[in-house]
Length: 134
Image (cartoon, rainbow, N blue to C red; front, side):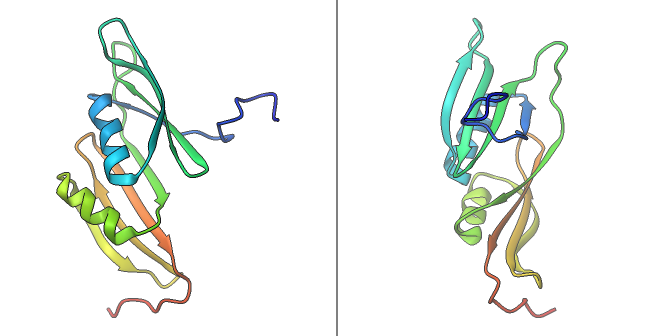
């Protein structure tokens, strides 16, 4: 066990501060397949701190508040099926940056922006697949 951090955390953990953290957490659960491991609330019901997990990685989320405003973010996430996750994201109303595309470096990738202004880049490694024609 590493003593300088909690065992369920990696050394670097993205922390998303958004307006509407509860809905953002549900988006992460339904679209990206994350599990909500911690959900601590303020007295007013807003999210003080939440911990979400996808495989071996975690992110933290909280509601913006005075002194801690919402911040723009961008995350790159490896998923099991980029096409299926992209379709789920489209149904959730994201703005497409790039539809699923086979990249020359062996990943199928897509990009979109969610309702909270978070830019997500998803990828599935498939090193043997050919690149999409230009």
